[in-house]
Length: 114
Image (cartoon, rainbow, N blue to C red):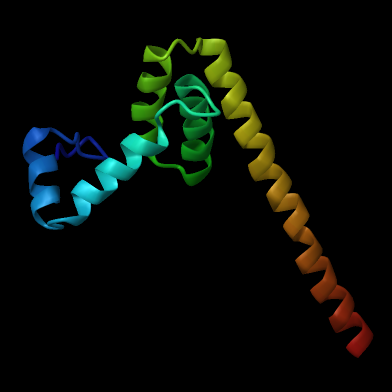
């Protein structure tokens, strides 16, 4: 890993090493991934747009790059990708606001107890 890069590039050598440290699991995961992203009720492009949105919320830089590239290959436009990202941003912000009910509930409980 370069001292200037926060995340190492996953090249063939690193991917092979990662796989060797989890014998058996990687094949199951790869098969699962291939199966999930096959066209079904949703198109492959739609599934990649969903993956972009989720990867923004989970903040996985590898997933963001990979699924953006895959979405483009499946015909997604830059505008569609950004729209998916904005949906993710709204959901993340909405979740933060919705969870404020927990804090307000706790405030109210403490105030009643006093």
